[in-house]
Structures are given as C-alpha cells and as structure tokens.
Image (cartoon, rainbow, N blue to C red; front, side):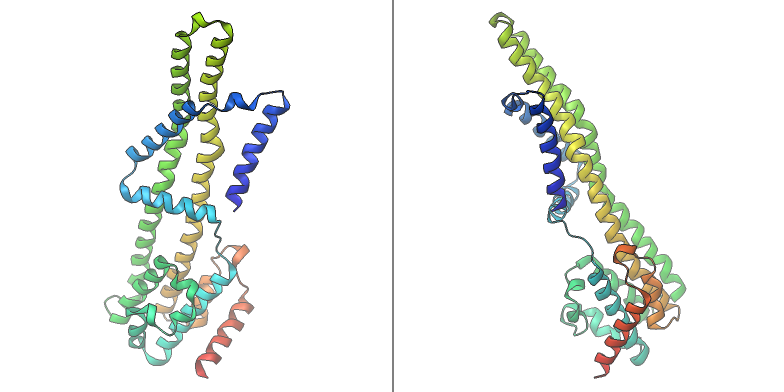
Length: 289
C-alpha cells in the first residue's frame, strides 16, 4: 500500500509543480514517447534477465504492491514453533521429529502456525536444517557452516532482481535521450510547417527525456530499493531459524535456543525476553494438557 501512496505523491507533486507554473498537462501526454521509453525498458529487462529472474521480479513487485510486512505475530509463531519442535526432541529424542519434518503440511504442530506454513522457503529451511541432525548425518558443529552457506546462496539469488532493476533504472535516462533524438529527427522533417508545429515537435521530444529520467528516479530505482528491504526482512527470518537450530544442536535448552535467535530481530518486531518466555510457558502447558 505504501508503494502506491509513494507513487501518487511523486505524480501529484510533479504535475502540481508543472501546473502551478502555468503548464498545459496535455503537452505531457505523448503516447509514442511513452511507448519508446517503456518498450525499450521492457526489452532491456527481457534481454538482461533469465526466465527465473523475470518471474522473481514479477513476484517481488506484486508483494511490494501488497505492502506485506513481517509482523511481531509472525515472529512469535516462528519462535513458538521452533520451541515446540525443540521440546519434543528434548523429551522424546530427535527421532520424534521425523514425522513432523517429512510431512510438515499434515503435522499437528506445524498446522498450529499457518503463518509459517504459508512461507514455503522458511518451511523448507526449518526442515532442511533439522533433518541432518535427526538423521545423524552431520555433527552439530558442522551444521552452522552448512546453514550459513545456504543463507549466503539465498542472499545472492535474492539480489538478482535488484541488479536487473537497477540496470533498467540506470538505462532509462539514456533511453529518454534516444526518444528525444527520435523526436528531433521528426522535427527536422517538419520545419517547413512553421514555428508553431516545430515547437510542438520539440516539446514532444523533450517529454521523452523527461519521462526517461522521471520513470528511472521516481519509480524503478525506488522499487529496487524497496525489494532490497524486503529481501533483508526475509533474510532476517531465515537467520532466526538458523541461529535457533544451531543453538539447539549445540546443546542449549529449547528456551535458550530461541532466546538467542530473538536477539537478532529488528527492534520494531522483536518480542521482549519476558514475552517470549511467557509464550513458551503457555505453549508447554498446552502441549502437556
């Protein structure tokens, strides 16, 4: 939602300033200049991006429009889920987690936390982090490095849409110049029509330059930055999972393991230590009953 509000602010302030100085808004309506700008930008996007990156750009753009934000409630759900899994492993042995990790969608524990089930990447990361311990295929001190490597790979992959959007944003002012030059070429062919007609063609050409700069710095580059923030938020949740699992694997108590992960969260969504302890106690009481 905020991205729409921001876009409206950019448009309204730009048009407001233009109209305030006596400008005619119809002069800015140059559909063929817009066709050149947006068409070439789309072409650059297609040329520069593999298919999976294009899909990621569309997905992240859609998510940005929805304005989703990681909430404190989602933090609690994730921390409580991990605490419950660790408690089961502590009471009944690691092998007790096997049924939950193999089919998390049907697991009674995972089903209590739909906000976790709805995030496929987080769900896979939890299962992939715990299964090597359950299967006994890896020592606890090796798990940290393995999960950190996976986080690095995910972070690099998440940066691809940002790099492409920044490329498009950096290219758009140049594309605007191309549109302007095309307009000037048309202008040269209409000199015989008189100063008024020449003025119209020159104005249309200048709109091409304006649009290239405007779309780049008003929309594309800010969108790339918005996606970067979203990536950082998702990376924080994945790191929370990693810290929790690695802490538990090294022998920390379930509550201590999730407490160590709580400390890496942003202050805006970070529950207090007391809130986490109370939630953990309530979860433990419910499990016993």
